[in-house]
Amino acid sequence: MPEHVDAGGKAFAAGHLGELTQIITPSLVDAVLAQTGRVQSRVRKLPSRVVVYFVLAMALFGECGYRGVWAALVAAPGMPDVDPSAAALRQARRRLGSAPLSVLFDQVKGAVAAEEAAGSWWKGLRTVAWDSTGILVADSEANRSYCGRATGRNGVCGFPMIRLSALVECGTRALIDAVLGPWTQAEESQCTMLCRALKPGMLLLADRGSKGFALARSAAATGAQLLWRMSADLQPPVLHALPDGTYLSMSTGINERDRLRRWSRHRRTIAPQIAGVAIRVIEATVAVHAADGTTTTTSLRLFTTLLDHRRYPAAELAELYHRRWQAETAYFGLKVTLRGSDRVLRSHHTDGARQELLGLLVVYQAARLIVVDAALQAGIAPSQISLAVTIRTARNTVITATGTMRQGCRLTPVIHRAILHPRELAPQGRPTRIQPRRVKRPISTFAYSPTRKNTPIPNAEITFTITTATDRTRRWRT
Image (tube, rainbow, N blue to C red; front, top):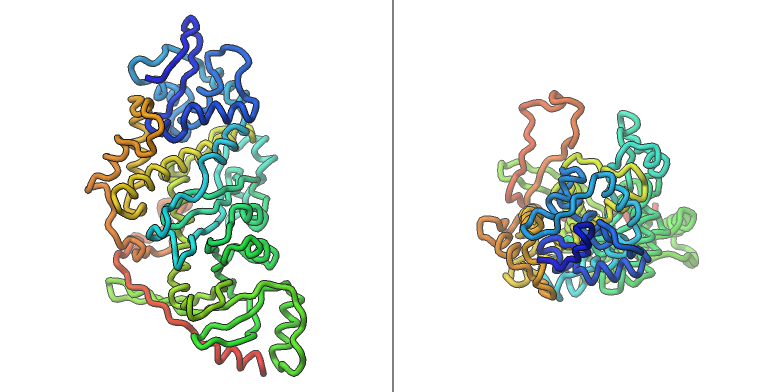
């Protein structure tokens, strides 16, 4: 059992998170507390290390109140008989603050895929994706003042939201970095901050929400390569058509783009000197052939900084872009699998809400580390391992205090056996599944027609057809 100090039944200095303690070790927590100056100055019933593990346990047992979370932490035989009140736990969280959880997340975040791991690499480039989402927080005056309120089609949403933007490693769905802020903070602003985590050798995938020359310039300046989807209203000028149907252009500001467009129509003078990012534009038609015989098509316009059309074929890039959905899958694991569907963060103070969200990020990343370790040992793709089974088993090890003594072992035996059970592994080929877009939160139970088909269609065949640039070039020159 974890080492503890019994001061007349009033205090104990140990903490644990079941087998997740092998990743979030007591020595790591102590170092974080010392770095942030949050080590307790006197003996308490709830030392700082215990409070950190309590915040992390709140992420695992989100459906429980304070007393329920504490009961899970001390449920194993031999645990110290300390029974703090909910008010004491609440005050301990406020004393701790969010700074230690922020530094702890900095210690566990990062890319984890092995060299050339399937799904995480493409032609020597580590594929990553970023996106933004909203996290519901308690409807209190402090949270409303900090977060503001999001607006939807029906007006103002019911709960304030924290905007979370994360850089996700494709294949493993691990968090390389994350930025938190009020909902009023623009996605572009948070993604600009995420550029600090980009490095040469990365290929960044992004949807149409990442727009603007300033953001593209900041991302390209890190040395990372870009593969972003463009909005339909953007018409980049065709500067040079390539044999594969793609064309070279420039990502610039609005005024510079207009100058390039005017020049490209005639090309009778020397090209204007314009500062921008050289890009290659790919336009493709995506056809999805479902198993029931139906076919749906959509248009796709991408731009990339990979300019060599021979080394980086357009059809492969169009297919590769769909790995961007790994970021959405990561958010589903964080917001639904771990936190719970439609669950609102409980903290009524802004710093407490940040602390609670950072605890979710730390636990999610620890679970992903376990998944990657298990997949590496078993020789399978991490996407075949269920995050739900990993989290469920991790909860059980907290209650039984399993695995808290085997320090230094990255592979946790109990969780390892559970998540690698043949019945729990997902079949290969799941990325070909499709599912029609639908409203996640209907206003009433009558919002859907009972005849509407919303079930996933497995094993769909997806084809990509590159649109030639000949017609576009002719249009710009007329």
